[in-house]
Length: 111
Image 1: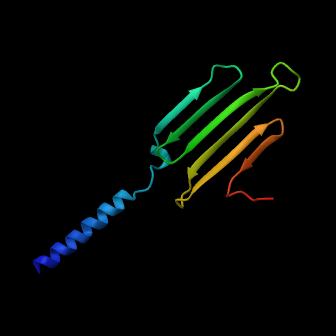
Image 2 (image 1 turned 45 degrees about the vertical axis):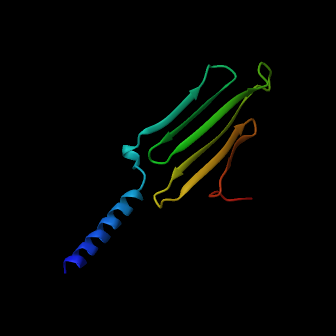
Image 3 (image 1 turned 90 degrees about the vertical axis):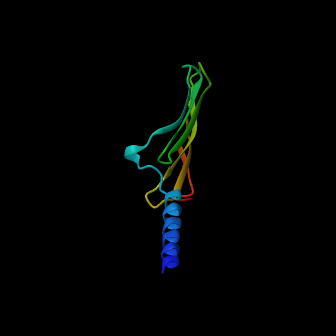
């Protein structure tokens, strides 16, 4: 009887440890910033990125094109990833420039 109790206890401990190591990411209400980078001197564009403990990551960079002309425009490229409530990670890549906002992602409809 003693050995079966030890076996049950060992299995329970294994299940508990396994479930803790597979714990979900922090929820959004308690998320913390894990990484933040920002390079913005105020001219010719910018670059920033961050990562939070709830699984969100974002990167974005902008470049000033045709500076000083009538065609001057900011060209922005970036991506954002997040973990949905079902545990799936979604990633959106985008370009925003003189041609408008152009998103791409596996979760978006394709033409």
